[in-house]
Image (cartoon, rainbow, N blue to C red):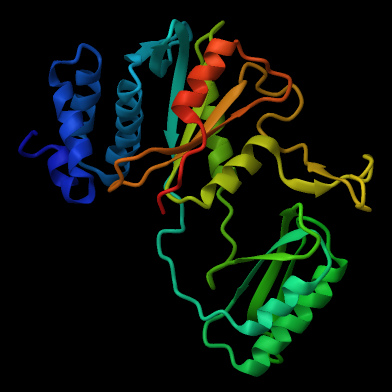
Length: 317
């Protein structure tokens, strides 16, 4: 470990076993370059952006992949990794976004909120409120939230105000779900956090690094387990109510995705596989999931490889 390198500077924040593995790359024909880049970063953002790549490289090696680092493309860009696994070759493009759920506040959840879960509408509903509300204010929040949920559509949001006009809480209809009644997602007082636009921007940047006429995989790293929902929204589009479709049996409304997703229609047509993973600096495991674009039928050996590498793993928040 370099005496003044990035791994030394940020070492207390990392898993020692992971750092030990990374240090063995000094003699690796390809990953020694990644180690040198990592050691050269003394700024936090640049270091952890590259550390996310190192976590992926370690994961690939542990699954007996052959790995090349920063492979030039004909367009003058670089693919982060060229990977060969069981004679299947693909290119990985790793991007990291530090997401804003780093501070988890403990909220006292009022039993009054359970009333909302008795509302017979098949929605995931996010609700947040200011800390230290009085019982009267909480009753006001629940009453107004219930009225809103009964008439709202997917994507709608409503703020509940006090008599003085200040916000005491808010409600958002997040998405449909399989149940018959409302299910609640508890938010923070600071507001609803939507990382979708930032994630979509990284997807577009990754797409610019694609290797032509090859299998390319976009990999987005975020900080928290909850970010996977924002990743899926950025990829597939916001949940919407679709009046142009037949609803499922027993439902009056059909739901679908809006036209704002990275994969909607023919946009970014060369992108067929995308992966989300969570970077927990102290973790020794990689929490990840992957998606296949609708209509894409990968070769069976590639599908087996994707399942080995990127199938759903336990999250590590």
